[in-house]
Image: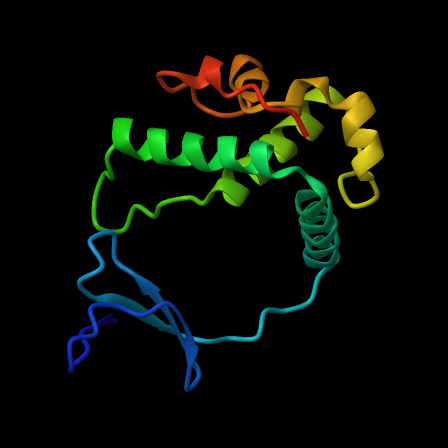
Length: 153
């Protein structure tokens, strides 16, 4: 359902009164859906454990590495405009997790992102050591100037 707010509020993102809201691309309205408790499955548990572990690893990365990912996200969306009002911007963290999942899929099917440590990523993860390495290994789309983003974990 398309939702417009009063009192100068353009859009809202989050949950409220059993509804989930997310912003439109131009931030002039929100989309709402009913909040439903997802059914617990083994896959949900595995993805949840992986997400928690990746969040811990992301927190341990240095500020310059995170800044490179933020720069990448900005460059990507300036060079690839949205395809419609429902095309969301991905954050630096979202692009990084996309690269990590692609690395795990490409590297070795036995690579378990739910149990990998920061030290493991530092030693084994030369393919994800920098934004330019991720782009060169086709884990994320190439953008102009990605070769300048070479800060490491």
